[in-house]
Length: 100
Image 1 (tube, helix red, strand yellow):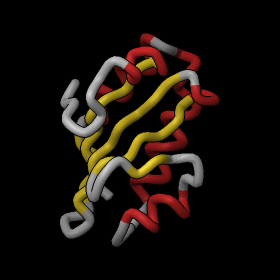
Image 2: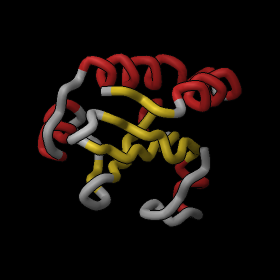
Image 3: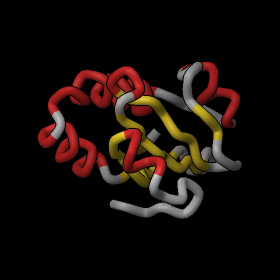
Image 4: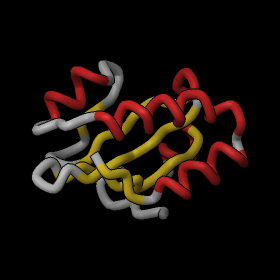
């Protein structure tokens, strides 16, 4: 899959070094994936939560941080919509946020 807004991911782990290992792993898995459905995402990341037909939230760095990504399986594209702390995640609308 093609990851849109990778730069924002890198900028985030530069500001929050404790997320770097998790985010790099997440990115490596997504880049190699050729998923066709949310079921494929769930199989790769068992702790992720499907929010709707295109959005998923992932736990980062042991659950202290969250990442929201939107997927278009037909174009094999993943858009990073949000990364933040668990507290910041609780303050946003996960279905409409477009932080980046």
